[in-house]
Length: 410
Image (cartoon, rainbow, N blue to C red; front, side):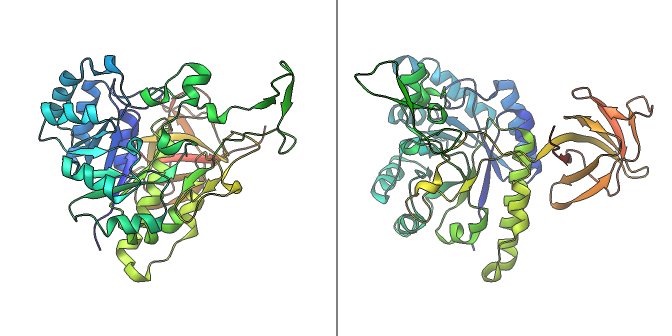
């Protein structure tokens, strides 16, 4: 059984540390330029160096995105940026465009290069072309089935790695190469500024009846005709591994640290169970139940088992399902007193029933019977954003454990 890399998104330094702490083997992130997620905070070079050190100190890796589809002016500053990445100790860069690939090979020839999903690699001939050019890993297009992936992995060299998305938002356009955002809003999705126009609510206008908008109904809420469900393959770890995929990739650099912790933790537990049990491995429903405690859309298996049917789309809403609130982050814990110092992230009340979870262990439930502020004064509510409070824990916890609580309808 070969090793499987669990690859997690890191939209900023907090999310990077969270991903590493909760079990990611590697993270992918973007710097100030040349990546496809301008909506995330991304990394200054100083923050990137700090994040790389944090990962390397724990035996993990950092991949940096250079996967825009560039215009002429986008090459300005690229060579200097590449030298900075190399000096910072980046483990690999993700590239989609042959021009950027050529510059990387010329400027930092020893850098490991991964082919981004934006390059739309859907067959073994294309993959072998990039391998012969010097690519170490290919991130497959999301439009491939497990059967197609298995055929690819049977025809490529053992030292060529295959990475595939296993969880997160899906794009309506082929491998994310979309012009709709640019056309509708002037924001170029292929240069990192997607407006998610596929999730807009649309009406039909007939050519000779300008100004008359005809709704395309699916139900009383209208329709979102290009709005995909989210990918979730937590139930199919064994099938993904047997297809020959080396790296399981989670999407979500714009998502919260709580989302990263929740999803990475579940996939970590599932992969570890697969390592442990081998052929006797069985999926456990609790892993999906945990994932659903972060905000999510309804789930789909995407293209893995067949071409998606109509039920892979969400016609009623673009909204997320959110059943739990992230309530607090554990900053410190005293084993003798069992007191945890917590940074509040949503209002916490005396008497609340909370769930506490951390890396590599099941969550536990407890009621808050005593709560103090950072001065040791008893309080009944922690209403202020990032307020420091202290709570006695029923079980031992570690720093960066998280507190959540069921969401109550207003």
